[in-house]
Image 1 (tube, helix red, strand yellow):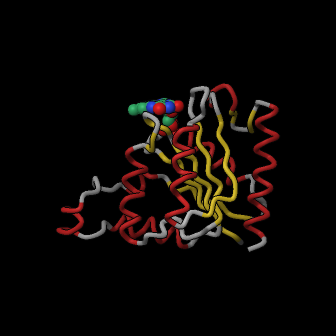
Image 2: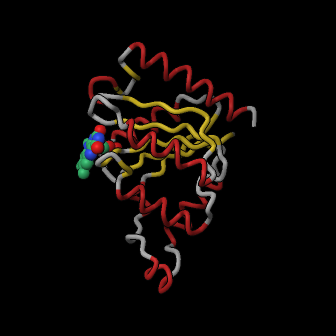
Length: 179
Ligand SMILES: Cc1cc2nc3c(=O)[nH]c(=O)nc-3n(C[C@H](O)[C@H](O)[C@H](O)COP(=O)(O)O)c2cc1C
């Protein structure tokens, strides 16, 4: 069975992005979902001196192996001051030192959500522009604004957004299954 790795780009234990990524990954039929929580891959703050002295941390190697094993990636990014959360950027930087193709050309469903009305649109734009340079194969993307108004454990409560997401899930699912 095809394997989807779902990642919330945050180290918040209650991450709304982890919730959205898990929810979406679980909608993709005939696949198994593995949710990678960044808290389970704790990493020291990236620095060239630390890397030179101590090498690549074991957790970065493990996370890289998990990404290698994926047939598809569902990533939802937290937005902190218009950019990646520190936890996500740190993991991203360590991963890029193992393999410049961080995302390994695996089909990716890229998302962002936030409690605000822009739904992490700025970080999503940044990632859309940058990920392709690091092996990102973005099949589709989705931003969910006002998370607490529009999301419930059973689905997206906003009709138009739910319809948009459903279409994008089926586009992503087709990409996974036609590999
Ligand atoms: C330091 C900090 C900066 C933030 N900056 C933004 C921002 O630029 N845009 C935004 O929509 N939300 C911002 N937020 C609110 C986050 O979207 C909110 O905390 C959200 O829950 C983060 O996602 P997560 O739950 O997956 O960690 C910020 C939150 C923090 C703690």
